[in-house]
Image 1 (cartoon, one colour):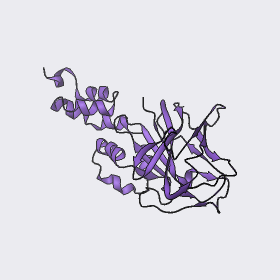
Image 2: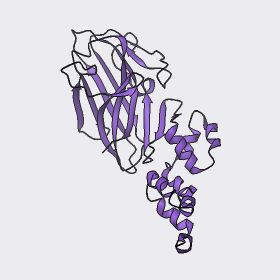
Image 3: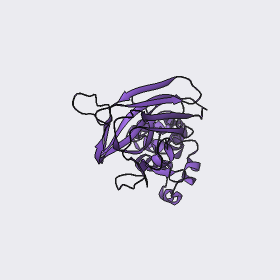
Image 4: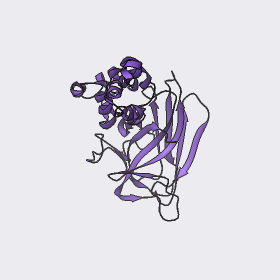
Amino acid sequence: MDMSVVLPEECLSKIISLTSPKDACRLSVVSPFFKCAADSDTVWESFLPSDYEGIISNSASPSLFSTCSSKKDLYFHFANKPIFVNSAKTIFALEKESGKVCCMVGAKAGISVTWGSKSYWTWPSLPESRFPEVAELKPVCWFEVTGKIETKLLSPETTYAAYLVFKFADSRNGFDTRPVELCFYVRGMEEEERSKVFLDAQAGAPNLSQDRGHGWREIEIGEFFKKHGENGGVVYSLFDFDGFSSKHGLIIEGIELRPKSV
């Protein structure tokens, strides 16, 4: 049966736009008629963030998007090539299969060091980091890092997790013998999540961090649900108040927010 007789292409595109990017890609190989409908701008614009034009204009290189000949090309540009926005302070991307927004705020913009900001933290540039600067802890007996991240960019009706992205310098001390405390909460809500973890886990200690490649690791700080129309923020802290044990060598690249895997 010729589907183009039964169902106009515009109607099929509208139906496909109510599915997901993964489904649209699958349907595009069913037949030439399905491909035309599934690859249409109607479908792929529905998978893009509603403010995608503003995101492009706020990116570090808006001209890069001039090579995108369709909304599908634009979608996969976001999915395959994360971009800098907010004056290169934030990395923005789309999760390829779902189209959900992911973002990462660099250490320079996303953290505030409340103890020894000048004396005990340095801001080196590392070739393996995507950000111009990272934060490295010099020898100190106690420290506290705090931060706030706005959630306006994130996809609505989605559960997100926040991750600390870090690594260690060749010379490090103190993070394998004593846990640090992580605290996380959503602004406007009283309930907070707290946990104690060994960032530099050794034999016998639970290793809760995951390898990201290039020496970087990530550890989940907490999770939250982004409601439709809610544009608040999340607040987090990382601290260790042991005044007798020296520690150094922790390098923080930033905080990443991405949809929570089910």
